Structures are given as C-alpha cells and as structure tokens.
Length: 201
Image (tube, rainbow, N blue to C red; front, side, top):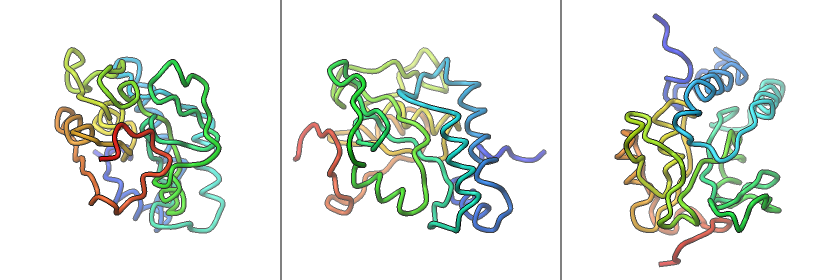
C-alpha cells in the first residue's frame, strides 16, 4: 500500500517536489486532510486557513524553484512573528495582533521556499499557562510545553515540520512527549529577531 504524502519525511517530500514527482498542491492537500481529521481532538493550531494554504501551494506549482524547501508547508509557533498572519502569543492581550514583518527565522524559511501553513498553539507568552493542545498519542495526556502545538502537529502528521522556541525545555520536552525529533540550534546560529522571548539568557 502506498504511503500517504503526509506520512513521508520533509526531506523526501522536498526531493519529490524538486523532481516534479508530486505537486506542491497534492502535498499540501494531504496535510490539510490530516488536519481536518485530527485537529478537533488535538487542538494544535492557533490559526489555519485551508483555502489560503492551497492557493499558496498552487502558486508554488506555477513558479520557478525557489530553494530547497520549495512548496513545503511549515507550522510556526504563535510566539514567532509572521507578516500578514495573526501572531497572538497565546495571550488574550494580543488578540488580533498582526506583525508588520516576519521573524528572522520565518524569513529564512520563506527564502528557502517554504510557506507558513499555520500558527501553532503556545503556552501563554511561551511561559507556564498551557494552551488547549492535547497529546496526539493519548488525548488525556499533556503534549508538553511551551511548543505544544508544534510538536503535536508534527506527531499527528498534520505538517511535515514546525518551528518552536526554547528558553528552558520548551522544544525538547514537547518533542519527547509527542515522540518526534526536536532540536535547538547552536546559540547565535539563528537570529531571534521577531520572537516574543521569555528571557534573553
């Protein structure tokens, strides 16, 4: 039986898109289908627009290759700024807030050809108050925090990869709780501009 596209690693999907073995639209559709099937239970996303995602994917199918992540959807933790998409930081204080520019890490992904598929739930201000996200392997269990939505979305095959943030254990803990790979880049390797940080140190 053929493996569904949303169950393939991001690296394989990138190779398939580059080789024109699969369309960006088909890849994105596969993740949208998974999201529609599981999101009501898992609650990983703070913002998502299926029509926008599909139109973006179709645009990638029409244009020249834009980089190694061409046409791949990526989820972005909601404490990371995304231009023209709400970034509410998991807090009622910032409801409806739309940043004027992307965070540096989001800009880097876009310049490599990826696009923002959705914004994932964060603990309020990436701190202690958890969001509504549940562990996809056991809905009665915590997904960990504060990058709960990003880890759960990847674990549930609703997106091939996602951005999180970590001050203490906010990436590696939810990754381990949800059974996916999570890592933090070497300090200083990725600019943190545009991230609603908890602490600089």
